[in-house]
Each structure stands twice: as structure tokens, then as C-alpha cells.
Image (tube, rainbow, N blue to C red; front, side, top):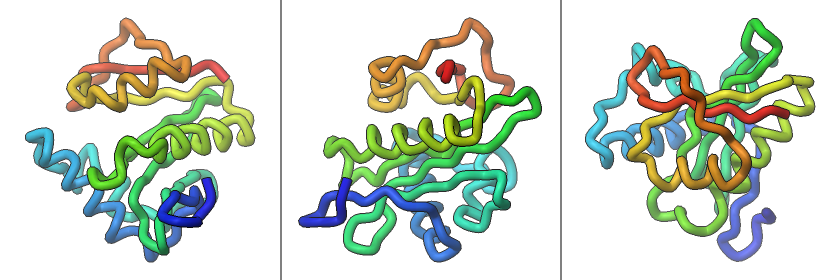
Length: 155
């Protein structure tokens, strides 16, 4: 996506994106009745844009403002882990999430991961629909954290 006329540009995150990322993630969670866990499940967003080189973090940028986030981190088994995939409520329904997800998958492939996984809450209906419509598979395994579904994509 390009940056013209309010369309998002997907770019690597910088430390300056941290505040917007936390706002997007925390506001979205609260809108679904979930209290953010900045020292637990959501600790990775506290340093968003400051990741070590092994982690890929991206934002969807509209007019110089981050409106969506996603991260891909390595796992010990040669796979990747997708997290903090959120789009600001005012910018949903425009294909931004699909573009962010696609960039994250591309980054995982570029790193040579054989699989990408994520955990989610099934009441994030839009995200679940996007995962399923882009080839992600629901695992019979259950996450051991606050989420209730685990998805994976073979790369």
C-alpha cells in the first residue's frame, strides 16, 4: 500500500512508534473487555519499535501516524511467532490488517521460518476471519496463556 490519500504504508517500526502501538493495542483490548497486561502477555508492546535485530516489527502508517501494528519473533524450533497484530478502530475495514499480515508473513519467509504461529481470542472475529481466509489453520492445541485459540501457517 502506498502513502497517498490516506492509504497506509507498511514500514518497519521505530522507537517513535511505541506510544501509538501501545495506544492501539490497549484501546483495542479494552474495547473487547480485556484489561492489558503490560508486565505479562502484552510486555512486548512496551518496547515496540526497539526490538533486537531478530524481531521484525511493522506499522501501518497513514500520514506519518502508526495506525496498525504487528511483530514476528523467532522460536527455538525454527518457526516464527506473530504477535501484537492490531489495527486502530478508525482504520479498520480498509485492507490495512491484510497488508500488515502479509508483510509479517513475508518477513517470516525471508527469515527462513518453516511455520508461523499465533494465539488469539476467538471473539476477535475480524482477525479470526482474516487468518482463516489467508490460509491459517486452527490448531487443536490450546494456548497456555490468556488466549483461547492457536493458529499456524506453514510457510
